[in-house]
Structures are given as structure tokens and as C-alpha cells.
Image 1 (cartoon, one colour):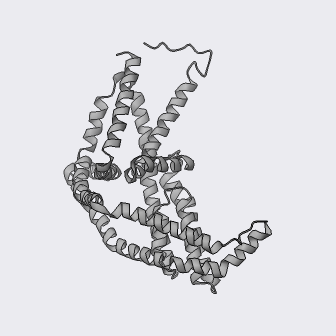
Image 2 (spheres, rainbow, N blue to C red):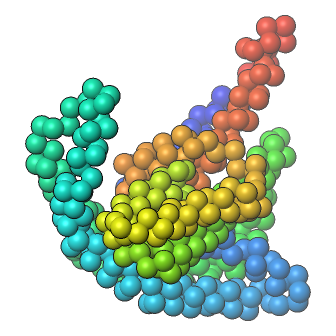
Image 3 (cartoon, helix red, strand yellow):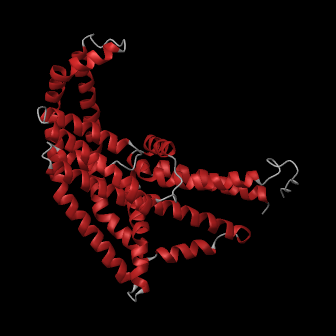
Length: 359
């Protein structure tokens, strides 16, 4: 097979794969979740296997423990967080009214000093924005929780994901070895080198960022709750869990947390400062301890690239696209860097270099 034929074959494989993903996107969630679980837990299974535990037994123990812990977290936290979310949405009009009464005159005064006019019926504008927010939130919740498709997705996650995850984790090393045997001999080492680079990026971001998000969710949730902030558990956990989006999680949590704190502790600035301190300390721990240790400089994903990946994945494949977008774009980033490096070594970049003959 000539090089041109190889390129056509690979392009056909990519197009067919992408088309299948689009066609089957509604049924992919349990399988993608199972693959992610198998990838995340494979180092633990390898560790147990090196110490004499049979692979199937190590897989059974790890998968069982993982789903027991996940179930306990869901059973214990989801009712609390959902209850606080419902109460927060009920109190949202009160916060808007309080803002109009207490803070809006100060905001108008500061804006006026810069020549910005905010006096044209701001209450109506804020009410309209609040109504739009409620419509968006309601639409999202309806899409996630409403209808038979959502029930099917939940059941498939509970039933199919553990089974598929068990088989994938049990046969993970065997599947990798099988794929390795099918690599084209002329390019096998190059492909292995890029696969190792992809694994390093994915391990750094997926495993590392997951641990960072879990820590921040626990830290913010417990810290805000201990300081007595209303809906502190919901605000903290939400801010921590979306911290994989650069700057968005902490910024959103800080703004909402400070807003609630100002309304709740209007005459007690010490507690407002304490709420701000929770987010500041959390960011210091993340930036100086968690990120260097768990992620470091292995990832190489620019924040803009991550945000673009999330938006593109969500628009193309919905919730499944959000789950796979960052890992997929991490792979694309590795391959793009490899392609650019090859370009810099080619005659297109170095005119003096002899062009490679295409068969």
C-alpha cells in the first residue's frame, strides 16, 4: 500500500468513526463512562496484580469498591445538594430584591462616576434577566431529568456501566497488547511514542484534575457550611466540581458565595471576609500544592483550548460530548504538536532540505 493509499485509508477510518459517534451518541454514555472508569482504575489493578492478586479478582474488588463509594456519595450528598439548590432558587427573587434595595444605589453611583448610566429602569432589567436564568435552568433540568430517555440513561449507568467497566478493566492490558500487535510495522515506534505522550497528558489532566475538583468541592463545601453560609454546601460543591473549567468554577463560586454572604451577613463584615477567605485559601492550595503535585506541566492544555473543547463537544454531542471533549482535544493537541514538529523538519519549512518522495 502506497503512502497516499494509507492516508486515504486513515481518513476514511476517521470519517466513519466520527459519523458513528454522531449517529450513536444517545447510547454512548454508559460505555464512555465505563471506559473512563477502566482507564482511571487501571493503575490500581496493575498495582494489585504485581503483588500477586489475580487480575479478575483485583478488577472485581476495585470496581466493587468504586461503585460502593460512588453510591454512598450519591445517596448522602445528592439529596442535600438538590434540596439546597431548590431552596436557593426559591430565595433568588429575594436576593434580587435585596440587591435592588441595598446595593444598586451604590453601583449606580460608582457607574455614574465613570459616565455610565444605569438609572433606566434597572429593576425591570434585573427581573427580566432573572426570568431568563430561571428558564435556562428549568430547560437544563428538564433535559437532564425529564422523559423516558433520561430514565433509560440512569438505568443504563446503574446496570450497564459496572458490567462493561468490569470487563474493560479486566482485559485492559490484553486489549492494549492486541492493539499494539496491529500497528503498522514501519510506524509502530512513532505511534507508541505518541500514545505514551497522550497517556501522560490524559493521566495528568483526567486523573489529576479529578482529584483537584474533588478536593476543592469538599474544601469549599465544608468551609462555607462551617461558616454558616446559606446554601454553602451547594455553592461549594458546585464551584469545586466545575473547577476543571479554568477560572470558571472558583470565579462563579466566589461571586455567588460573596453575594449570598453580603445578603446574609450585611452587618457582619467579618463573616463576609471569612467566606472570601475560603475561596482564597482554596485557590492558594490548588495553585501551590495540588496543581504542581497532581498535574504539573505534563498536560500542556491551554485554558482557551479547554473552554473551546467543552463548548464544541457540548454543541456536537450534548452531555456525552462534554465528558469526552477535553480528553479528545488533549489527543488532538498531542497529534497537532507532533505534526508541527514534523513540519519544522520538512522541506516546506526548511527549503534546503530535500523533499521526501511520496510513493
